[in-house]
Structures are given as C-alpha cells and as structure tokens.
Length: 393
Image 1: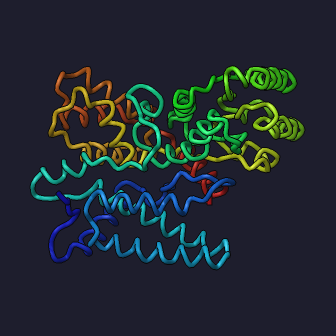
Image 2 (image 1 turned 90 degrees about the vertical axis):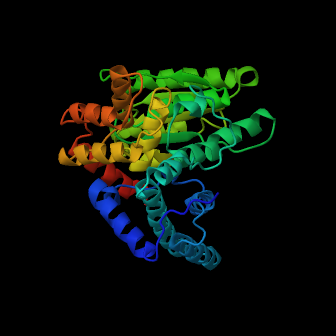
Image 3 (image 1 turned 120 degrees about the vertical axis):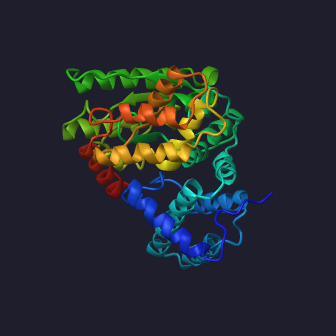
C-alpha cells in the first residue's frame, strides 16, 4: 500500500506552510542538515540516493517533492558534466535543503486520524547499509543518523571487508568526529570496531602529559599494529578530545607528521573525537581526514532514538512526533539543543515510571528534565555551527 504524505487539492501549499512552520518551531533551518565527508568521496550521490529512497518508500512519486528531486538530479548531472566544482557544490546545497524538507514532511505530517501518522512514523527510512545490524552490537547500538552510518560504511567498513578478503584497497588513515558532547562520537567508533572486528587501542592524554610522551604511546601502538597485522588485521587507534593535548604549533605539526603514514605503513587508522575541530590545526587538516559532523539531534533522529530505547515498553499508540516537538520547544526556550545522551536518559527515566509508557509519560519526564543544565549550551551550539560552516561547506 502506498501512503500519501499530504492529501487534498492544496497539498503543495499545505506542505510548504507546514515545513516553514516546523523550521520556525524547531530552528532546523539554522542547523546543518547533512553530516558530510570532506576530503574524500562526494556527497552529491549520497543525497540523491537518500531522497530517492524516501520517495519510493513513502509513495510520494506524484508529490511536488519528487518533481523537485527530478529537477535537481538533472541539474547535478549537468554540473558533473561541466567539470566545474562550484556548479556541483551549488546543486549539493539545494539537495541538502530538499533532504531536510522531505524529513520535515515525514516527521510532521498531520491528519484527522492517527492511523496514517503512526504508519508514517513506523516507516524505516534508512540508507542501505551492507551490514546487518544486531541490536546492541555494532550499528545496532546507534539509532538514527543514517547518513553518518552510510558514510562510515562506505569509507571504512566496506573497505575493511575487502582488505580482509586480500584485495588491494585504499583505507583512510585519519577520521575526525566532531560535535557537541553526548552526540555519539565515541559510541560510533566502538560500533565501527564491532562491525569490522577491528581491535581498538585507546590513547588517553591528560592535560599535564608532555606531547613527547603521548607521541611515544602512538608510535608503540602503530608498531604493534604493523607487527600484528597478519594475525589481527587492521587496528583502530582512538583518542577522545585529541585536540586538547597538542596546543602548540610545533606539537600540531609533529602530530600530523606522525599520522601521515599510519594507514599504509603501520596498517592502522586513527579515529579522533573532539568537540571543537577548529582546534585541530592546519597541519592536521592538510592530511585530508574524513570529517564527520555529529550535529545535535534533529527531529527525525530524536524520534529514532526514542523509538529505539522505548521499543520494549512503549504503548503502541505513542506519538513520537508530538514528544519530540515538545522536547525541541523546551530546548528552544532554554536557547540550546538536545544531545543523544540526554534523549536516552529521558527514555530511561520514562521507563522507570511505568511498564507501558505513553506519550504523556515521556512529555512529563522531558518537561521536568530539560533545563539550563541539561541542554547543549547556546555557546556550544554556536561553536559547532561555526565549525560546520568553516570545514564542511
């Protein structure tokens, strides 16, 4: 059965008004809508596929969104043929806007009856991933953020599988995850390790550690990865807040030099997480790392997170869209954002109140929980937005 997103003669106008209202209410228009890769790959094809899959799964082939998609698909094809990077980037920006529109429409459709709404919210909107996620293992730990999963699958997981098959494949040496605390950077690294079977070696650097001491740890782990590659396969070297330990320019230069050959020479890949990627320095950026931005939870991702953590105790008629609208409204009142870890905490608190969680239960918990001390502060939101603008566009 096909599900039409908006019915009626004036569905285009209704949808446009609805999208506009949603963006005003949730401030989505001011937040990045696509977690992209810079330095490797091309996110244009990614966006086209995501939007095309959405249209196919929701039966909106005759909707105005499909017409807009066809227009941008043709424009992107022409931009590729032109060979001009600025033409391609201009179309990609329009594709990002369209992606947010389809997700807004998906999450905010309203009808007189609740059946259609619940059907729409139950549709799984996923970019195809070549791994079978198991709950609690690998990507099964992560709800939402389908485009990030797709990027990580394309740039690392699928390549590791080819490497294990003995194929000659280029694997990036450096990944950098950035975004506000609690957005899933560390969890994603561990999920990748589980999906690939890679051993994770974690490096901790305390504020008083000398850079030389930290570099020595890196070198030992690099050599260990190289020496055990035939037996154990590629290792992941993970460091949280990697921008904090090397503040001087000389230190940053040495760090970049250290990472330069880690993939080819030492058979390992560095995954670094940071709240502020702007502190990484020019030498690090010259390595052309795979940058992945973990934005504060959007409406779509917030719904997926709550559904994931409430699925074993939620009432079948629970209205996740209404719940997330309230959460985002509370965040806006406090001039901040909501992190994944805070959404998970709200779900856990709601489950403690009753065995059969309903819409009101979650809204009540959220209303009591969200405040100045539990949101992502405004200054953190601004810093992330500035970093995104500088490095991802």
